[in-house]
Image (cartoon, rainbow, N blue to C red; front, side, top):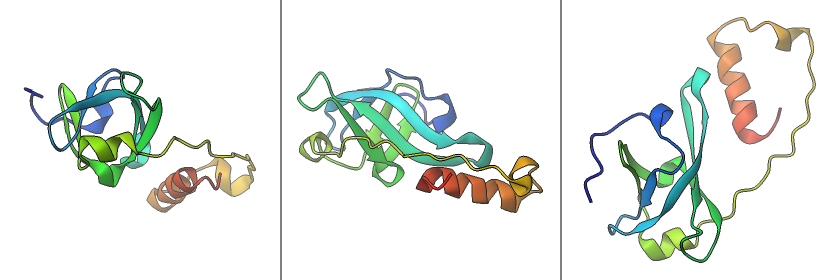
Amino acid sequence: MDLGDPVSYLVVSDGTAVVSSDGHKVGTVEHVLAVPDADVFDGVIVDLRSRPGGHRFADAEQVAGIYERGVVLTLNADAAAKLPEPAENPATMDAGPDDIVPDGLDDKLKRAWDYLSGNY
């Protein structure tokens, strides 16, 4: 399968093929999870509906490469089918004066970490 050239997670489209490490198409990208302002890639939601399983979450560490026409996992097809279901982050919003105006890179990184860890 020709996946094309490597690309950034910022340009991956929903519906892009997701391929296992052993070369099998296991699904399609449902959604890329990222914090673009902090340049943090968290992973992808994979639609496995063509196979049993529905939507699954592949962590950034389980993504071997991102290409024009495919996302390659570090997992073989059997392991990809056993990826966990995506979980909702219970969000609570609390805004104070320090949260309203970012003061620099430290603030952006803290907000990105809080977003990724569900502490926002």
